Length: 491
Image (cartoon, rainbow, N blue to C red; front, side):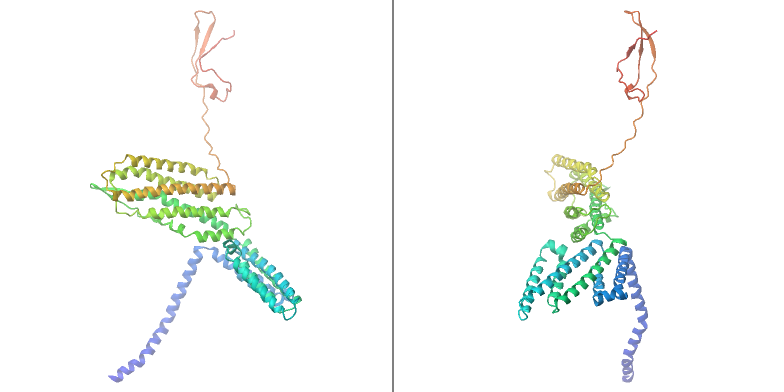
């Protein structure tokens, strides 16, 4: 028995190792398939990612020609590697991001190189012993000052990368230890290669399937408003939807209520909107967006949309509430509350359509007016309700819902004002007037012409009775008398 147990113990590790090796191909295959499915899903979610990857590869290939071409290599030498490095660092997903980093890197390198050469020349005037001290003081001064400026929100958002490149380039040039002539040659080569790399990125990013940050921001704001509209349009039926069973009322929830969750993405969209707006300012004129398009106004609209989404978040907690008010009280406020919700949703959808098509948002005004009318109707209904014997604990949730809907209506009003301001700044197109159908032409009916003898005069008179107003007839433009006219025929 002891011999058999010892044999099993020796065979155990070999058996487990053999089992692991035997299962390795199957596990590797499953991992490869899983990775392939993840890559496929990533590309299907946004095909622009695949195109962006191909664009980066193309830009790297073009920048590498500085090494592959003998003529270019003789002109730039080892400094040609900075062009490849520039492509890797500055090529971003959007055109705005690529232009932002390229211009920041180019101007920062130019300015830092010039100041570095000047600092080295200035330090050399103090003699060989004092030169390191002067250079160290200048590096400390500019490094500390530039680092402090990075704390300013506006500078950090737009020029943070440029400041980093400025500090790096100035430190490298000023403390390199080369002669001024060598420093100038080195700065010229690096600046030229950086410009070539940045220009390559800008051309490839702009000319081949460009991804505009401005378009993404425009679509994001529109999509967020539409999500809020979908919630408000369906909230009334979801909250007040009841079916009768026996003597009581049982709440029935819509099974397909996925539209009630769309507003949640609006709550966390601030960082994305800020980033897109910052990158959109760097982009050139494209499509319907000019060079100085009011991107800041989109941030204002986004902030109001999030404010409305927070009210909806509070409203959403009452949908599945088990506490119900009395049937009398609920039936009186149901219609104005549903009207407020639906009209606010229609107003938001109209505003989203106006932003999407860049047309005048005036059609939303009628829905805003209807929602204000519903607020007045709600006040009248509450005053007419008898709450003396009502259960206050049951009334409070419904009253809170009504109060929150009123706040949402006010928030939609603010959003409408912001969209109208955007329409004025961006010069949205006016809404085309609705062409009304042509009015049917009124034809004169045949009347009866009867001779009438006037007893006082010997002259015969003819009375003509017309059944329609002759002024509406296109054949007769002259005004006609409304009373029967007496025509004296000439013989």
